[in-house]
Amino acid sequence: MYTHLPPLVEVLDQLQSYSSSSSKPPSIFALHEGTDYIDLGFFVAILGVAISNVKGYVSEERQKAKSASLLESPSKTADKPKTDLQLLHIALEILHSKICE
Image (cartoon, rainbow, N blue to C red; front, side):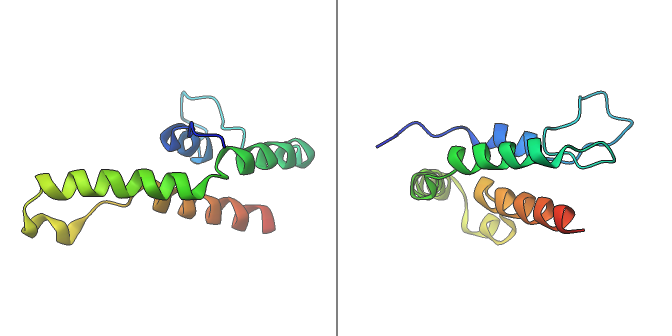
């Protein structure tokens, strides 16, 4: 079984929207007038392979949560930031909704 998980931060960077005023080059998942949907389909297939080990990411997040809970006080747990998996889920939903438009 494949054990090395691609860092979700880098995957999330590719899924993030971009603005035309941004100095960053557009993401391969950016949708605009010139989007090649055949290429986009290939990129989504590659993305599916890259994040296919969901159990591995969940396990990794649980380990991080355990470590963080040992360091945090109980009062700070109310306003937890979203995890990388939650951010990935949101980014994928946004991409899907843009493709469907």
